[in-house]
Image (cartoon, rainbow, N blue to C red; front, top):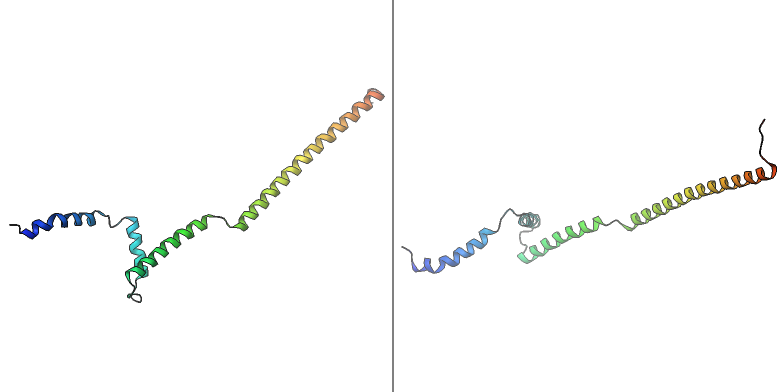
Length: 127
């Protein structure tokens, strides 16, 4: 037989139990929170209040995220080196293309001189 108290509190208690038991205890976020809390609260720091422990956990988690974001960005020295290397590559390709253009220009000048000489002196006869 159920008592009056069991009838009155059973549905509320069941709902509360379902809310707590539905959360998976081995989810990534909860595992990280528990491991961070184990790092913060030790035998030496056992008088830490809940508020201070929460603040330390918040700082720890966000500092890790901020460090990860900052580590993915190259520093300004690396950017400057990359820009200088890109400029050097551009100058090298420009020099190569310029030397090729100079060779083509010199070839044209030689052809023009040969054609002008052959027109004036006549055909060259090799013996």
